[in-house]
Image (cartoon, rainbow, N blue to C red; front, side, top):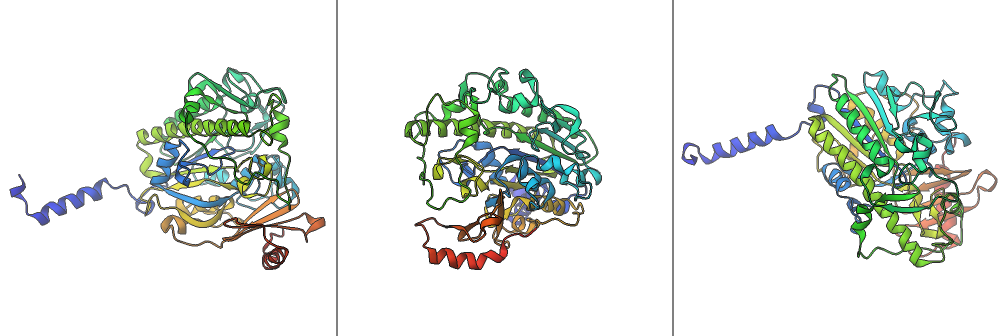
Length: 475
């Protein structure tokens, strides 16, 4: 058979076949691309694709290999509701109400604010569906059990906003519950639980099944769609079916790095959510290294459980035939200190609470799998999605598009990420994290150097604070 063709002809045929099989880039598609947005609660960048070889996260790692990992991505506020408010608004916090868990629901009382990103896409012809914990309240409703249809957290944003609660009966119970429909009793429910059973033993299994069902319905429509899926784990309590715990059996896991409380401790906290919200049977990881290692393993099992749900959703996208016209985003809403700086939780302006995974995969992306090193912020996601889809971005956004980094992983950014907690602010640059105290104490600074070597002396603190002070955000 080969004698019928010359070598150049064979090369041409192979080349054409490769061109035919290659997915089109976004610029080549004739219809607006879909968006699959996956947010994962309390997810540190402790994943295989972030160089953490002890982690079992094959599905997120595969997404990273097909897209762009943003190696230095930072949230605006280290708590769920406020971080997600910056995501959907594309703006820095302006007021104290923007820095707490009620940030999104407070928007409903002010119709002069810029529209949220799902509103913008809905107004531009997209079907918009949310499943699970996408904003602060899973399912998007408020009230005593987070299921009051008269109290919508973000009116006008979603065509459907769903939270399957199963045996837990209400979104509030499902958010903090343990296996078999048992809700949390504050201070009494165990912080850690592993049980034998299927993925639907915990709410994320139900969220994933519902997301897959919604994906199937959306792909039958001629409209472009935005499907946002909020995975709850690894949020407390740290729970997972036993098969995910077994992944770490016999494996040497890393110890807590930098476990001491800093001498300068702006925004340091006593881990009230971790210690006050759950029962630890008298154990304290700050004093008990064996218990500290156990807690970390439970967290890792929860991450692997979340990774499995991500894999199911991505497999469903592949089977739907829509992958080559769908932008996929995976984002963590804030980090979580696993003992670093003597904190077990978030709610601080330290690196561990502020740095999160961000992975964006677009059809035909160049240099897939090559990480972007530029410093980026959560407020950048909104304008990026507008830029990639051709949907006009509203005026007043603080974020900037990350399309440059998607086109070229070596592209730079402005090199700054700003974060907020209480009355304090923090700026992350290539070399420094500088945190300034609240309004009553704006001359008090906390400085960390990267890579972290030794505590900076006062002269260094004064020098860097003088350089960066003008760059703090002023509402």
